[in-house]
Image 1 (cartoon, helix red, strand yellow):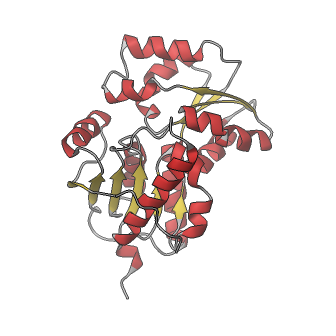
Image 2 (cartoon, helix red, strand yellow):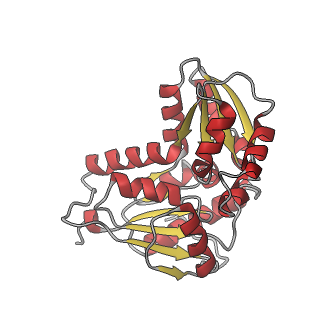
Length: 271
């Protein structure tokens, strides 16, 4: 029987945004081998029906399982909103999303309980952050920011254009002391958002929170990799590999061997 601790950890996202989560996992778990799947052929997820995104998440998870992963990190806010917790109940390995760690971190940081959420159209409409925060007693404000993703992928996160767009999205915000970056692209906009929001507002990046939770759980389950050297990072891409690597470099994500993968149009049966 193979040693599960030596198996790779699977991570997936609709495209390159989840590389921020991958980088956080690499920092938190330097000995862990990571297998990242970017579904760039079907990006973006944020404007697609949730049922469709749920199907994508199941399909990708089964592909990662076929490749021997010991656990799966859904490094996409929209996919986490659409597929969890049902996906975790279905799969035979541990599954983590980015929403619960982000919520927990925001509640810990907030002083007043007035928390904003910035995300894709799908994430904000699904209220996956707002409902959890409000059940814990917080007052929330959510804003869909669809232009942020192309700004990040064009490499202009710290430009005048980015500042204008941020000011536009944030102009009607109520008083807040904490804002969750509810899309894995948005940490690239941290400097721009800090200037727009001011020094008294804390930004919560769910990538770091998620990595901390995954590390804690892997160690508790005896599944954390140990070894003298760093783990290997590999990438699977459903779209054009060269375009993916170009954008990954802009985001500063952990690079490694990348190959194209065909997922097909089937719907995996529950196992």
